Image (cartoon, rainbow over the protein chains, first blue to last red):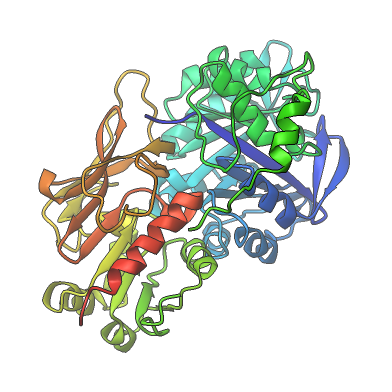
Length: 289
Length: 215
């Protein structure tokens, strides 16, 4: 059976992974390759790497960084930011990306979606949508949320699907960094409108929000950025939580996913002293590949 | 590391589309040596091949033809029976033809057709994500993985062929061919290079099996 997919999203600004709050404030986290190595070891299912400066600064994607990152990444790596044409996609894949995500260029040059799907296959092309609620529709914004497009998220998603996009990566500008949970209404509208996978992103602050992303919003996969930073083993504890709530997730890392307890904030509670004592003297063999 | 393999023994076929670096990263992590090339003499000199793949069928076939290596590869694989592992699109290319964006002829090394995954109910296509395998032939590719390993799939088309060629399937709406093998030809629809530990164990199994091929 297909597993529920948990995606780690890394927002890169000035070559550093940052936490983004409402597309306005950015808090530094660290080097992308180190963040990727940790997420990979902690059993994340997929990583999306977004270079949010590239388009604004008018430069090409940072291929050297993608190559460094890909060396540490044994899960699928999707890379976005600064893509202008087929040549950029080609280079990204040659530098270790498995899929590419496009945002600005997908709106300004829709034919590129079609052309790239013909060369690299539908499955390789992910379209990212940043939406904000205006009046009564979810409007798509460009340029880190500063440039309105007049398009609704549903319209753009449908158009992208028709042109051959393989997935939609949907982010809510209002909920970004809010820790209040996904914009369920937005995700639901888009997920109902298209039949390609929809990845929900923006606003996770509690593991419960992931299960809402699946159950209430109907997302195919759930992603979070800020949530995974500054917490040890965050994907492991998240998967333990999802597993306890009846979701079929992939449990392939060394970690045990059993016996976790969570407090009201969704943080892992400390284990019993006896258990920790026992663990101290237990031999943990390293898996031989 | 297996001392039997010299640098020129295993060749990753570089045909313009495909995520070589991901495959290279995985093999380097395991400590293997290999060559990445699309030159005729390198292909003739190698003892085993890996055909990676992220791309569209038509484009990939066109690239192989432009590089003029279709005959060379076919000779090595069909006549000299050198083992080859196709990954994702690489495996689909072994088929007779594909209906991806039109109709394209494949390498025709294996009887079968590449067909679209049909939308059924709320099934979303492409099939993206981790899926568990049902393995019917464990030897040699899956001897080291877990019994029902999870692997990463990312495709809208799949290889439909005779049951005797299939070594693993996964379920997505229908039974989908996840791995095939016929004599010296091996192929997988999923991405072992992006399969975390199971993926690395898969490659270990493949390289280990190469020792038994004498050519």
